[in-house]
Amino acid sequence: MKAIQSVCVYCGSSNTTKPEYLDLATRVGQAIALRGMRLVYGGGRVGLMGRAAEACHKGGGEVLGVMPKFLARREITYEDVPHRMVDTMHERKLIMFNESDAFIVLPGGIGTLEEAIEMLSWRRLDLHTKPLVFLCEDGFWDPLFHLMQHTIDANLTPPSFNDVLLAANSVEGAFEAIEQRIAA
Ligand code: AMP
Image 1 (cartoon, rainbow, N blue to C red):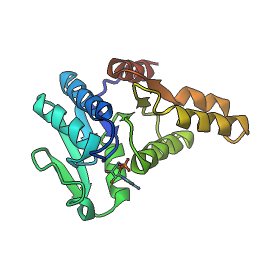
Image 2 (spheres, rainbow, N blue to C red):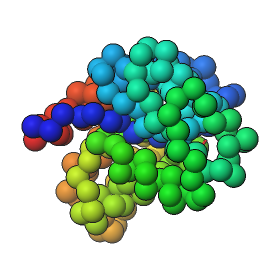
Image 3 (tube, helix red, strand yellow):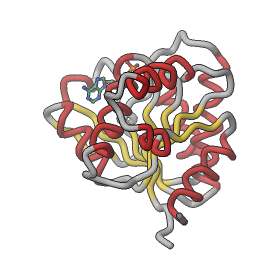
Image 4 (cartoon, rainbow, N blue to C red):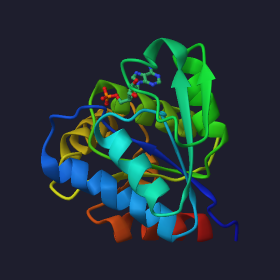
């Protein structure tokens, strides 16, 4: 069984979202550090991203940030942790993908959705088998699961793709889902 060494976290960059979401990001960062895993993420200090990275770093965990140069000011590069500066969003996503064994998706906006959906679409094309789990404690991701079921009901996505859509409503549950999938 391959051990998970690096976990990519996709999550929102908003500072003004629900405090519960910011707190969830903090707990995910702490959990990654506690497990001796590395957190790979978008490299900023803003929103859930910043909370997760800071919590992991302060918990003694390893962090890798990947920041497009043009966003460095807007998303405030977290300079205290190792980070790579890149030119494009595509480079950022490819490095985040290559450097990670699994993905956790926390509440987020269009950027988070884009990153998660790209990984799922690559999975659909059999370009990888890395597990991706949507983590929320309040049903935040339910509308996305309804939309996916809608595409299945229309025979646009095979029902078997439901097996790829992992969901967890606790931090512990997210790691369990990933570990079970890796062991399978
Ligand atoms: P959001 O969920 O909209 O707050 O965005 C979360 C993160 O996703 C931010 O760091 C955005 O810069 C990033 N992001 C947005 N669109 C893309 C994209 N096309 N490729 C890579 N990262 C993106």
